[in-house]
Amino acid sequence: MKAFVSRSYGSPLQLTDIDRPVPGDGEVLIRVRATSVQPYDWHFLRGEPYVARLMPGGPGLRKPPFAILGADVAGEVEAVGKGVTEFAPGDGVYAMPKQGGFAEYVCVPESELAPKPENLSFEEAAAVPMAANTALIALRDSARVLPGQKVLVNGASGGVGTFAVQLAKAFGARVTGVCGPRNVDMVRSIGADEVIDYTKEDFTRNGQRYDVLVDIAGSRPASACRRVMTRKGALVLVGGPAGRWLQPAGHVFATLAAGTFASQRTVMADVVRCTENRRNLTTLTELIESGEVHPVIDRSYPFEEIPAAVRYQEAGHAAGKVVIAL
Image (cartoon, rainbow, N blue to C red; front, side, top):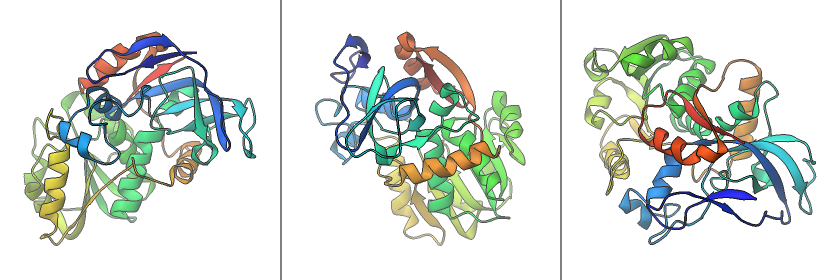
């Protein structure tokens, strides 16, 4: 099969012919029909921030822990390993294997798979797993958002942000999205009750109070964010400004440490260590098929142009998700 391979930090992705994987016990071989690109991929491609190389689950110290990136996949079951009972060849599925999506085939444990939403194409389905799972963990598990609460999403126009806006609305919250001027209409169209253009207004100085603040952009200090939160509110950290040495890890850990002394809860939405991916994907499928949630796709690239897709996503201007069609 063909796959884009990365064998050292900073080296270009190389389109290579390698052996097709064989599903082991409890595994499913997926013929990849689509995948997506996200910050997780280029952090591993660059090995940045450098401090993350010392952290469990982060990039390896000297080289990438796996050669084939691609955290999301949507496709068809090609073959199943011994003990697989819930999937058969030809089934449409999607998953978040965290690696292997930049290839024509990938093996995924049955426990990580879910049936693809029937109302999505493969490209649309590939936009869902990591970004939507992150937003779901942030709102349902970390913030424990309730109907009627006021939720602010800082960074509402990106992959995670567009799902966070829709999920907060699905959970009955009143949602404010913060984004740049060119995405104001899009964020409003996916359900935000109010949209703040950060070039015109500082959401930390508008006098509003929020029960939940989902901070994806990391553009304001934690102290400023807490100023606009209710006394028992929740500040949920998803990301922050990228950097070579510390960021966004430095921003996240500094905010968590400072949160120890605040009345509001400060928590991190950690999708990488989530052990409930299949359950979460099933929940997302229900919300998608009911029409409450739908992926926002900025651009679609052919498989051969994955390096260009990674560069575009890394530039930080994508509105929604960047997907790859095979």
